[in-house]
Image 1 (tube, rainbow, N blue to C red):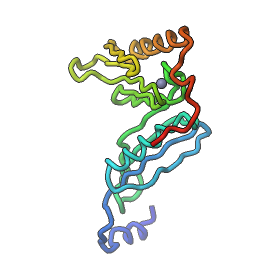
Image 2: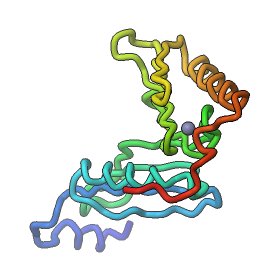
Image 3: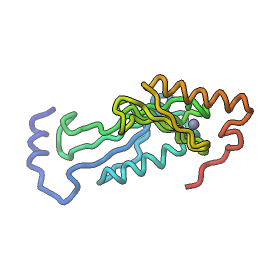
Image 4: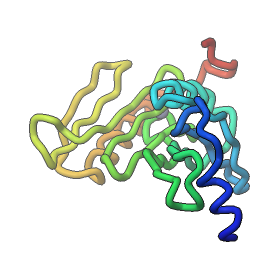
Length: 175
Ligand SMILES: [Zn+2]
């Protein structure tokens, strides 16, 4: 970083602009990143990101990031990653709509009529809760791997029964 530029930023007149901004983005399978905007609160940034992810079955996405930037700080110092999620094929409905946050052991399918989920238990730390809302299926597993296996089993049963949650679903979800 050029020292002169650094000085210019540090002495810039103080304005009423937000001192931190929240920036959600998603990455496509071909590596391209789509910025979803710059927001003044974390709450709005999450809303924008979640709304976008609900349409993720229409695109091939690999990850999402929510980053907070401190304004007028140079380079990486100004950046904090609040959340990174990876998108996988859903073990139940098989669409590319299963968003996993590997730091918090949580995952959720954003596909319509599916919403399979995984979360670290708040009552039994270390255990993993999982569920599939359409049949009110709830279970606890010892680890993430077992939880995914359990969800896979639901997917296999659905396939065997000839019904997948997405079989009748081809249109864009309503907001
Ligand atoms: Zn699903």
